[in-house]
Each structure stands twice: as structure tokens, then as C-alpha cells.
Image 1 (cartoon, rainbow, N blue to C red):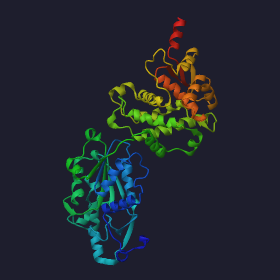
Image 2: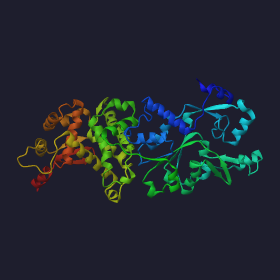
Image 3: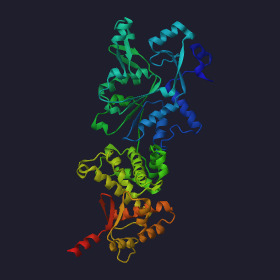
Image 4: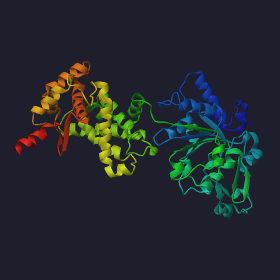
Length: 490
């Protein structure tokens, strides 16, 4: 049945339409999805066995909800996706400021209209996407913004006394009646504003400039908060916290696979970039590992969190770095190189909060260290682990590579060199080819060059080789060769 064709209250009753409050609506529609084995929060990865079940339990319990977690943990996205659990269309008394339910009007306007017109009362329909309201808590938010205030212009135009409740201009919350209302970063809301929410959450009263109106608003409140804000910028006042039914803790992805799913889903890439640049799976792993390393790094303030946006922005920058080089060289296709990871440093430096020691090091240095730590973590998953101390008779799988660098004056990889020259340069080290073939025999020909470069960076991180950055690229040398050469020249 096309409910939008019902235009009057009488037609609504004849169609046996049943009105529900929003919490029952969310609950019953969620139960339907659970019975049909349909995902209620599609596209949210890593929360399948933690946050989503808790959120569903809170909805089934008809609770107001607080999503507590560090930045970049999909708190607002979860709240926005609750809209999908609402009925597609909702009837309201036409002309009502606060979405009055024709079966249960709460405003003076709707009650008087229904009394006057009865079954002929006009009805309009509101789509579920218009039943979501969001307010970012900032220090300048006032009670008038969210609850309402007396409107002197309305009083003058209608020639009403200030004692008449029709002079009230409703704020955001009353206007969001029968909707989902989200307050982001709740601790940033001034305490006196939080206090104004008490009665709305529990008793359904609103107080405006001496008016105490019994307005049993039908609301689903969702709050988001960052634990860091509890000490840095504010806190949730205890009585308000007590009135929030469920507090749900969010978290970062637990593994690389989940993190990669999120990045691939959220990265805003031009189709040309994905066509031009070939990205090995190892490069995607490495990119996500940078965020994992950042969350444990001593120079980074862990309380601020490392947002999933770091990996997303870094991935976009990574492909743009390779794309720029390909276009400059007139190439229609290019392989992603390890050297392209230097292009993601601006994505890292803007998204990490450093402790004092980190500030002393500098954000760019810390970002480069994170890339190095990511290499050290993933290297043993691809190649034999490099021990700090080897027995003299123990075979060293990397000795041939190190000897090649010892006998050569150095090896350079230029940032802007063509793919052909890049492949030729890496192909000039036979020992690299042998190592890749021996320990990663199933790797594709396209991915082999990235793996060779990864090998070089791994040997640098494990102190088997040295690398030096210069204006046009990177130079790799034997760790002792330059020192011995210096002695010979003396």
C-alpha cells in the first residue's frame, strides 16, 4: 500500500494505520532484520562480534545510547545508520512544527486543529532520511538553540501576551520529535546545557523562560564522546550519564584484514588511479601496519587515538604519488614502489598528536620511523628473521646481498625514474632475485619488484645495509663500505 496517498486523519484511521513510538519502531524493525538474517549496520567492519551486538541489544532495550571511543572509530556513522531501522514514511499533522503524531498530538497547534477538523485534519508524510538530526557540541551552544526560547517578533505579529505559550520558538530537540537526535562530542557541551537535557530524557518536560510545558517528546537520543575529552575539555555530568541507558565502547580494527577492508571501502579514488597504478597486497598490509605501529609508538600520545582516516588518507596519497610519476613519464601503467611511501608522510604528520619527546624529534622524523617499524614487523612474515647475533657457522641467507653492496660503490633508486629503469636497477642485483624466488616463489612478476625493494628496506631496518636520502631519490650502501672507503682515502 502506498501510504503517501492517505491525506487526512480519517483516511489514516480507515487504513487501520497503527502509530508506534520511535523506540518501538526501531526495536521491531531490528527484530525483523535479525529474523531475516539481514545486517542492520552494513559496511561497518570489525564490530561484528563487539560493538554491533551491543548496539543492537541497546536498541532492543529501548535505551538512549552513548558511543564512547577515540576519534575515527565510526561512532557517527553507526548513529547515522540507525535511520535505516525506521519506517520509510511517518505521518504528521500537516503544519506542525514538532512532527505531531495525529493519534497522539502534543502541541497546542495540533490539538486545536484535530479538535476543529476531526477526521478531515490534513496529514503529511515525512521520509526516514528527514528524521535524523545531528548537533556538534561546541562551547557556544545555548539552551535556546537546543530547547527553545520566547520569540518577541512572533508575540508582536500575533498580538499575543508573553504569558501565552504560542510565543515560544522551539529549538532543535522539540523540532526533532519522533526522530533520532545525535549530539556529537557530548563532553564539550557546557554543564548547564547538559542539565537542560535531564527532564527531556526522563520526564518529557521542557522549561523555556518560565514556561514549563508538558511535552512528552518521542525521541531516540544517541550521544558520542571521546574519553580524551573527559580530562582535556570537559566531562559528562553525572545525572545525565545516569539517564543514558547504554554506554558502548568502540575500538580500532583488531587486525590488518579488517583495517584493509575499511581503507579500501572509504578511500576516495579516481577510477584513473586504480587503472594506472598496480598496488601489491604487501603494500596495503604495510600501509595499515603504519597505523598499528603509531598506536604503540612512544613518541605519539595514545590517548588521542590514531584515526582510521590516517590509513585512508595515506592510501589516497600513496596512489597519487605513483600516478604523478607515471603521468610525468608518459606511462599508461606503473607499479607502486616502496619509495612511494615517502609520499604518505603528509598524511601521517597531520593525524598524530606527539608527546613532548615526539615534538623534539619532529613529526616528519616520527612518521619515517613508523614506516620503518612497519617494515620490521612485516619483514619476518615474508623472509627469514634477521637475528641480532648469528653463530659463526650459521648460514646467513642475506650474505650474498650484503656482499654485493660491499663490492659495489652504491645503489640508487630515483623517485621519478621510469618503470623500465626502475626494474632494470633492481634486476641488477642477482642476489635479490634469488632471495625472492626462494622465499616467495608464488609472488607475481608485477609484485616481485616491490618485494625486492621491501627486502632492501628490511635489511636497512635490521642494520644490514645503510640508506641515504638525497634530493632525487634514495641510495643504499653497505653498512661498513663507506667507512672503509673513507679510511682508504686518508
